[in-house]
Amino acid sequence: MTSTSTPPGLARFNDLEEDAALAALHEACASTEWARRLLAARPYPTAEALYAAGDAATAELTAEDLAEAMAGHPPIGRPKPGDPTSAREQRGMAGASEDLKAELLELNLAYQDKFGHVFLICATGRTGEQMRDAVKERIGNSPEQEREIVRTELGKINRIRLARLVEEDA
View 1 (cartoon, one colour):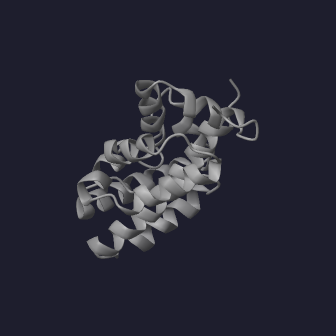
View 2 (cartoon, one colour; view 1 turned 45 degrees about the vertical axis):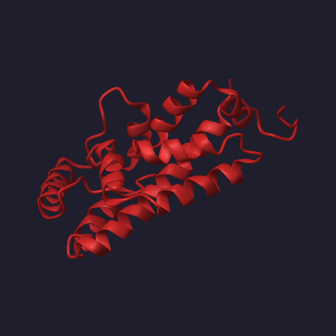
């Protein structure tokens, strides 16, 4: 039974059928392993316990799991059409100039050529210029350095998405 101190969104998540909970977790992160780990630890007594489980699962993702997670993210500057999450998270690009969008596209392609995956950054609250500057800075990293930065950025994104999941009204 769920405690009355459990936030309603978290209580709903805890009570979801397994398939529905797995689908909700896949909305937060495209890594199957990450979602399975969080699913296995239900029910969560607090949102913080869920976030901590998400952080731990992110820290333990293999390179293949990270690749699966990144495949669920559109390139910066090109949110998925019709996807409100993608549009909300990349809001900083909404008013970007065509020059900035073109520059970011070129940088995204160069980054993808070097690392073999999409440039991943927690875009929430960042301007287009900040995201451009970040890809310019990070493109000089080694693959090992970049994998750990990606893991950190993915963890930030996952926390934001989990918070939205447990704070949603019915």
